[in-house]
Image 1 (cartoon, rainbow, N blue to C red):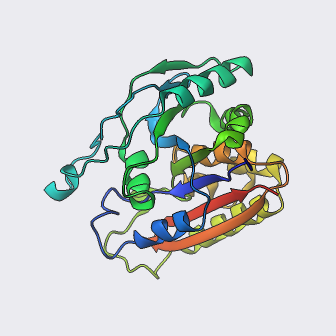
Image 2: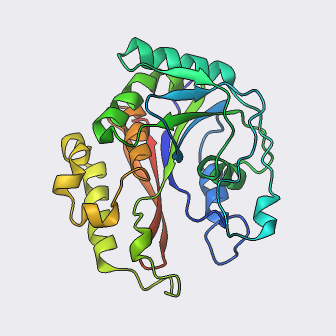
Length: 261
């Protein structure tokens, strides 16, 4: 079996599955362009722990980890089977590479089930969720990806789910889609240029090198999953970019695919 690509997804607002003004159909388009995985290992910005934890739930619950949204959203269920064997293997790979990891049952938060629902609406791809460590930064999450690379050889797609820019305090919920803060473009252009040439050192030091880094990510939990997807990628990956626009002026939605060379 050829190694699968690894992905980073900007999962947007929880309303992505029910709001026709948001780019939900594009996730299905992305899925149709990719090889179908045997299972998914998902890192979401919305599950943070002190040390990595892999979920061994056989039937992970759909977690509605938000408030103030339409009842319709709270009624959505995503009954995909879990992938406990993938979770256990991920924990072993991390621990074998000097990153102490644990296992426990855990459901799927909206950073996991929203993009999975849009990409695999039949809920027939097993999924295990792996927590991030918001206090440990980019290099730690890149090392996690490096430890997990071999999973891609066995039909497991490693997916990071967050947001390429995420400053809710700067968001203008009355703004039109086209009215993006120019700092969003400067940041994403820099980030994507560094991804394209595989400049790992610059990317891991993005908070010092990227323009407007701390404005785009006052805290960086929504960007950390990209570093695990990057770490899991092949050394000579090719980059595919699916740009879905910028919403509320400061929230860019871009998906990245790290294809094997």
